[in-house]
Image 1 (tube, rainbow, N blue to C red):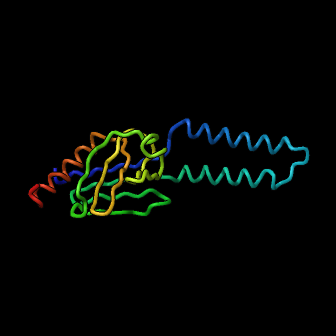
Image 2 (tube, rainbow, N blue to C red):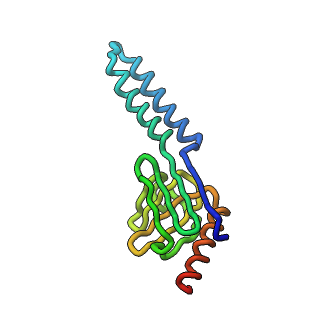
Image 3 (cartoon, rainbow, N blue to C red):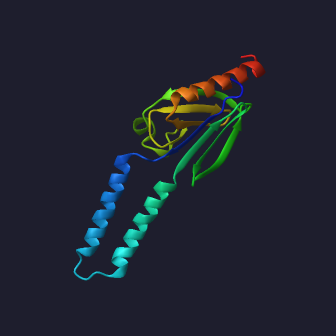
Amino acid sequence: MANYTFKETQRFNQLWIWMLLVFVAGVVFFSAFSLEEVKYSDIMIPMGIIGLVFALFLSLTLKTTIDSHSLSFSYFPFVRNRKYNFKEIESMELKEYNSLWEYGGWGIRYNFDSWAYNTGGKFGIMVKTKNKKFLIGTHKPEEAKKAIAMFKDYQTKNYGS
């Protein structure tokens, strides 16, 4: 088990999100053309903003890697690569959760107890360090269990817990 590497890349690929964005873009586009006197800025500024929102959602990427000695993740474009060696981590466990109720939604969220980094789903890896507590969403709970078992094995060998 020592050579197991958990890797996962997640994006916002829920159909309802994209349908909502297209609907809002359509409303803005058609309402701009319904004006009596259409100005270039009346169309381009709102469509530019919507284009930026589309670009943001297309670029949002949560990458998680757990190897035999560390956990690392990034949430592009907001969180650069963060790496935690197993020595820094006090506990790691798979948790079933409801992001909407526990964190108020998806993305990068805080609930006054811990941070959450997710794109959807109902499973996450809860990580506790000496100073931080955070949850990284996963769509691969069975594979995450293997990585957590590897962490616990590391902990047992190095700390006798």
